[in-house]
Length: 222
Image 1 (spheres, rainbow, N blue to C red):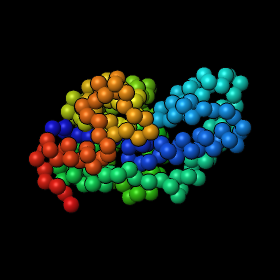
Image 2: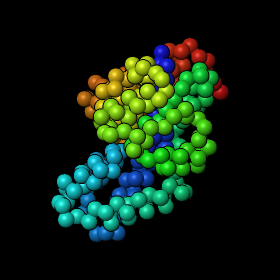
Image 3: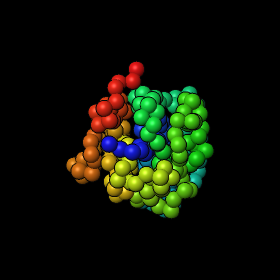
Image 4: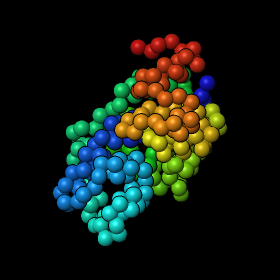
């Protein structure tokens, strides 16, 4: 039975990974850049410095990375104003955690301003007890630092935390932190390595809710 839940944000709470992919591709088209989809997928869901390094490793050091990222962010912000969607089961899972009085935290590579903006769009600003975002830790995922700090802020041992992730690096980070790790795949499917690091791999947050209900003995919350 977990004592707390640590949520990733992009691709887990919000359907942003697809928006980022569209924004990366749109910026490449505008700039006339040849960036394969596989390279772009590798640059999503990791800290910006790592995204830049991944792209530059493919394109070479002369690639105009700063104008490209500015164009990408502009595209993403435009998409997010009208197309930011919750992933299935978010509200229902949060309702169950409220019933169980179970604390929860977001641990993300996004900055605090982005987190608060996304949460406010869907009225979720008061549904999390803490947020760990970019700038709060020295080393991002796949380092365990974001998850360890999240556990610290909730005052719960990492071993008693359930970590929910959609990305490979997120799973690696949560597992390295010693947490019970459940993957809810979004753009990336679990590899044998990733499955070996997970307590479970499920289709959506409705299934996570069912897992917690099963171990807690809680009734279905309608």
